[in-house]
Amino acid sequence: MATVPERPCLFCAIVAGDAPAAVVLDEPDVVGFLDVRPVFPGHVLVVPRAHVDTLPDLSAPLVPVLFTAVQRVAVAVVEAMGAQGTFVAVNNVVSQSVPHLHVHVVPRSKGDGLKGFFWPRHRYDSDGHMADVAARIADAILRTG
Image 1 (cartoon, rainbow, N blue to C red):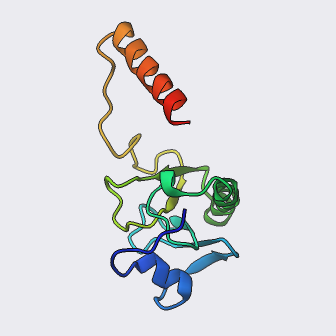
Image 2: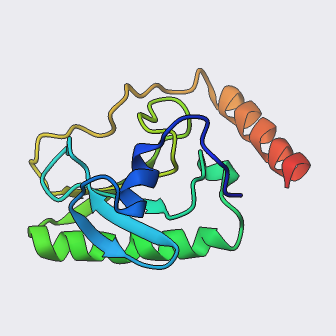
Image 3: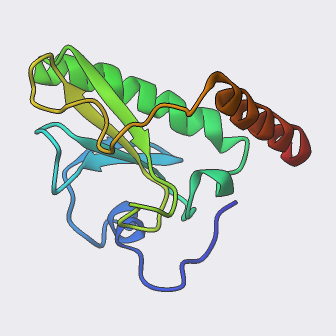
């Protein structure tokens, strides 16, 4: 659901044309523009035009609109940048530098220097621990819809 930001939102200003950006996609419900601090050149941010803080706040009808645009941008980034693929990511609250939902589309190629994900990875303590975590999440999905 679109909300009114508590303070001025940089991405809302970009969407409105009030702040500069290198726009690569301009559609009725979504806008895509280059990240000013890219992981690699060609790193695009795709945002809903309406202000939405996080992915859980996005209305169900806009989910396919946003992610269809992300899919198209991912294909275009590979072609335009000569990449082998892309890394697509969404931060919700933690590590979300601008509190306006945005999807990162980062060009990737083997040997580009990016090692796995941006965070350390850990194994589960045991198969039982993994099963417990899976059950807790599955139960939460059933409860929250």
